Image 1 (cartoon, rainbow, N blue to C red):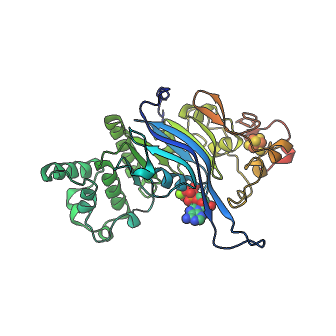
Image 2: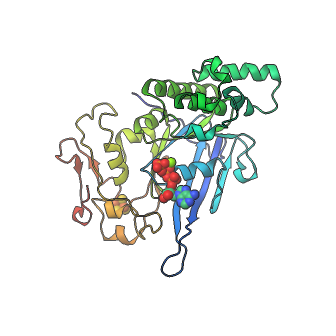
Image 3: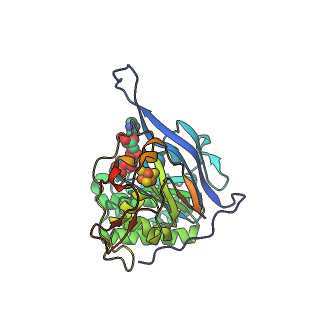
Length: 352
Ligand SMILES: Nc1ncnc2c1ncn2[C@@H]1O[C@H](COP(=O)(O)OP(=O)(O)OP(=O)(O)O)[C@@H](O)[C@H]1O
Ligand code: SF4
Ligand SMILES: [Mg+2]
């Protein structure tokens, strides 16, 4: 797998940018109260900023509960941020002002995304709004063909379709509206391997043809790497590393990103010997994130400063940002018995 080449960065004046997320926070207040009578808050998304240009894909990765879907819901306007702003589309309109179909989304669970009283064809047609009948029928046929759905399935209701077929209806519905941005949250996870490959190829082809930008969330690092121009690694509500996709092949700097990356040995050429770094311990709670670096309780090279001082997300090269006091000090090494070389105070963490 060769992966994508990085396109030139966004121009300074923001031309071509179709998504701009600025310092977005989303905290959920919990129902229960603490012993001190306070209602704790879940820090699901904690100060995230990203930009995405037309025709590009941003991959979002990170373990379960790190806030990927919450960020996705903020990007699509399904939820509103506690603070910060989300602007979308070629005119960069605030999502809270209505995005006029500029953003579409495909989620993990197609059954709940489809209206049980609507046929597949009607569900897809609904996304087209006021388009004239002939044009509408042509585009529906085209959308069905694009996602590999036989036209005769158009008269079926969701419960008469398999999970894979339901998801293809959802993807057709998102594509047909010709949005500037599509959020794909575990969108291909329910498809079998060959269909998944077909849909990923389809998404790439459509992106080349239409310039639609994607935010692609998946547990499958290979799938994310295949389609993404840049990737952001999230940990406990924050981005800890964001980089052009090639950096994923060879230059990750954050210990969590390095560990995550090691779970896919052989994903890129020449690294079959790399051993998997297994992170022990549960991530700390998003209700009470640790005051210093959020990864410190699990980081093998954490030192006193890491526990006390929260690192900032810092640009280390063009488009490559990392949130760590000791970037690049934990590296993968196929020759090492653990697969990892550490420098510094490994004894203060040592959880690998
Ligand atoms: N409506 C809500 N009310 C309270 N807490 C929520 C709500 N939605 C999400 N959370 C919490 O926010 C955090 C982030 O959840 P989110 O669904 O964004 O994670 P995720 O990265 O998408 O996980 P997964 O990979 O399992 O889908 C979790 O701790 C979750 O329990
Ligand atoms: S080295 Fe320190 S700052 Fe960097 S990830 Fe580990 S604990 Fe966090
Ligand atoms: Mg999720």
